[in-house]
Image (cartoon, rainbow, N blue to C red; front, top):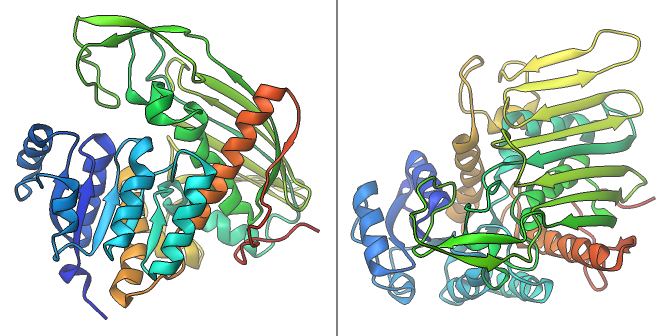
Length: 395
């Protein structure tokens, strides 16, 4: 078994999320040998800022580096399939940002390529790895909420509220047909699938584009940037600002989700409530160490994250004692700890989201897009997709 400190990694993409990957890997002791950017100049600048070795001159140069065991793909969505496929072909293990690809045909191909390669493959659904969420997964698996009946919540942000707000995700050729749903809604959909152990079987979606014309800056804009420059051009927008989605889960549970990137004051508000036949659980990502547990006939509970009182799953994801807040960056570290255990063993393992999970989210997102176009309930088409043994099957 190879020590984690002897495993080499490289990160493709030098934006906000690429930096988060780099910092999480460093905390684990993984050797980050370099980054690849959209341009040599941008990559070189980011490498200097992060104190990394000189940036790679190209993606191929990174693949040719025998020291790199794992490639982290954080490039724009339209490059995920190309970058992940090439890394697998080069014998690298791969961690890919979501969405896994632009279409389910592409994601299905990546699942097949990954399986044939024997390499470790993961999708960056990091929200699963808040310790409290791991604890909820354990509660539900143990039947402590009873039979799951209702799953509700939202994922709201405001970083695209203004017509002058711009990001490459607004462009379908770069980000895909869906924007708010694929970018942040996919996290909520994956999280509730993971927590309940039930896949989404059908959707009824309404997508809305409130800002139909935006001002695109002349130069590049990083995610969440506030300085967008003065020069801009008018661009027509076709991707959704917000979505409301009704859901059916396998096993009979029902769900309702609101997704928005234009909700004033909401910076990163992911909220879920899962109602079972005997108890309920609710969580808000902006207060990540708190879990509300609802009861009838006795007082409700507010559980504060503390490894001493979490179940085994929650303790495994926790890195700090109670009272020491764990947040967004910590979830990446917890996720990569699971991924790199498998890399150290040289083969795919368990306990982290794989390309199969990324493919399933592509199928759900395509059902959402079709439902909105056709204004009706749409089944998630999984013909030829084997049931996931980790999830409960429909009764």
